Amino acid sequence: MRILNTIGLVALIGVLGSAPAWCEEKKDLPPEAAELMKPLPISPTGQKVPGFPDGAPASSPDALKLSDDDIAQLKSKHFTAGIVMHTMDAGWPTLQVAGIKSTLKDYGIDVVAVTDAKFEPGNQIRDLEQMIARKPDVIFSIPIDPQSEATAYKKAAAAGIKLVFMDNVPVDMTPGKDYLTVVASDNEKNAYYAAQELAAAIGGKGEVGVITLVYDYYYSVAARKAGALKAFAEHPDIKVAEVGTFTSPEKAYGVATAMLTAHPDMKGIFVAWDTPAQQVVAAAKTLGRKIVITTNDIAQDSALNVARGEFLAVGAQRPYDQGVTEAKAAAIGLLGKEIPPYIEVPTLRVKKVNLLSALELVTKEPAPSSVPKLCNGECY
Image (cartoon, helix red, strand yellow):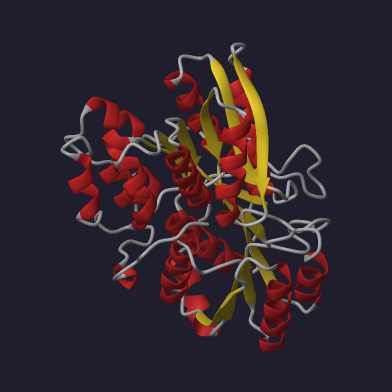
């Protein structure tokens, strides 16, 4: 969900080895940076789906195991896969796809196509129908509109194609029956962390805003709104003056402009992810307003916002690691083995002090030289 200029992304390192990628630790970090690099415990449940009215129980990616014999069997089957994305004009999907493709290659699973719906549900439905016609053994996808697109995904399931979802599950689809699993970051905790940092920065007092996607049934983003509102509610002297919504990230500029104009005393805004948060930064600059902005997700371009102090804190996903996890889940499912219904990747906390380490962990490549230059020796 973010824009990223990824030169050399094909050189991304590291599929999961003996230790999960999200448990990597850098040595010789200042204590604050080292603490931030420790993953938070995962939240206990995820999206409500049929069979799990209180939310599917969360499992760690560590629950997915493949033996050498399993991998040999996968290679002998010559399985194929399709990837149906909401957009490819962003760092998050680029890294997801990289993680999926790299891991599937190790299992001898060929990716027949990757599609880009350009954030239009109608495009994604057409992409999905065309992918079904190619008859891959498994499809990876993140639904843009889990309501209107559910029928199309059910057609894929009815055709015998296994499905692995990223972040969101279409309505009325049952894990283990209609799809294998959903892999997501701990979206609520990502937002809770970022909102708490905003609250601390304004001394626990004053007006704040929330800017998010208009579609509340887009579960992963709705969970972020819930996490932010939960954090702000813990501060009796903080007032959420407005919750603004946009239909596409570039429209966050207008939403922020209207919000800041209507609330001249607003001290900070939590934004659902980094691409629209960049629009909020631009709107605040245009209006000459100094506010605290926190968000979710980090990439090479939005790392510049952290380095410049425009984003105070980020609750980050690990899209490459999520892609690795999705590929492993699909491989296990293709072998007919049971998979947890919901797999959750823990929150990575990002501030300026641990920016370089966090960015490398997320993107699997060193930070571009522009980031440390802006950090002035304050990033590790």
